[in-house]
Length: 394
Length: 165
Image 1 (cartoon, rainbow over the protein chains, first blue to last red):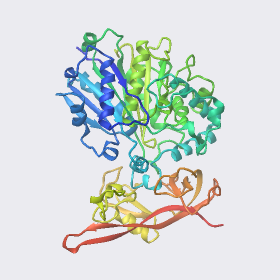
Image 2 (image 1 turned 180 degrees about the vertical axis):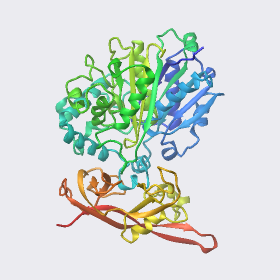
Image 3 (image 1 turned 90 degrees about the vertical axis):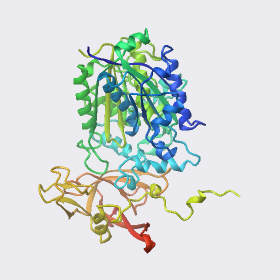
Image 4 (image 1 turned 120 degrees about the vertical axis):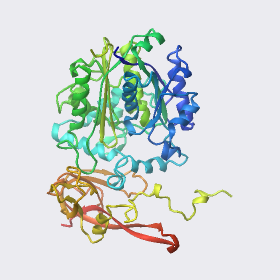
């Protein structure tokens, strides 16, 4: 019998500047996750996949998975591992959990991601960002902190496609307004277009609300088989239909597209994920894309096929990413407003899509049967896509 | 009385906090790149088998996996395609303005090369401007050499700068 992987529960703790240790954050997320599924106990979980990239630098902790397992009262017997692909660690964990449960090498896997980024002296996390890109060749040029790279990307999008600052601001406004009522978001305030356009400059054309914050936080979800899921929950099942991950470049040379606003590697990953999921872009009713910067979401809606290449600015500026639009995007507030503790982000996205497909999201999209998550990691080094559905792939 | 810092690390060199590459031959097989840079040469590796030129330099050809590579010179002058300037909030280790640019050095694989621009006041660089290689000294690396004690391995690094008109 074919084993189909499902995401059946999930939760995150409060994200922001947290007075807490890395292991505290993971415990809070594990509790939030199991609170979402009363029928599941820690002893039932036979696999743990931990996604964290900065544990080594900001918490002086490597070999993180056994530590997290112990603190969370888990005793995994099938898999206990930590992965590091920066901003895509969480979604990568979900992909790996799918493979493990569908192949019969694990039954019930917790995927938990988190980061403690604020250190006693604030310079350290920014300094450590030198390691988020190729340290010796790119970080050394000051390209570890991403605003300059995405400012260049935005400028090339403006030049090649005629998009405008107001369209970037429309992304910030949509995502902040989605997060305004989200109690676990880092930024819980409504934003107007005027406020977004009047914000302080970071790196032109990017201003404050175009950039996601630095965030402490964690999230966890449960991936298991359809058969086990039916015993644990009465909620509608949400299947992991198709996934892909494309890694194609370094920052200083070898960018795969014709210019920085041409994301060939997103298209490659999307094509593969759609094919595996047996759906097309037009089938996607709701998406969580990697809005580390407003310009990222503009380009992602193009490369994921929600609109034509070059028309992402118009798509976002004409409210197609909002409820009632063609594809509501980042309906919980996205990275821009919920925050971005790197390893946790893909899990947060997966949880929101799960809730949308189960009909229990805060900003519910009508008739949501197919949902998509997308992460980019590093300075546009890798793209990770997961397509979720109310039915398994047949 | 408490002091800032970590007392047990006084006078020690933590390589994990070094913003620059560990360039010395003892730790890096691409040390030739840095030795050439000290002479003002901007180089990378070319495969003697298939002819592929790769940047950054490496120890195998990424196309054919040959280990038979040689260092070849890359152009040291190019033109700005697009640029960004960060004036406020520049991270530790860099001065304001922190300027980045995609430059065209006119030859593969550096027709679109993303780099840092130095020696350039804020607001003065424009698309199409000519830039050139700029090599500068960075702090030496202390390397333990057993009974010979600790040697200081001199280092340089590079950015690009505007060509004076």
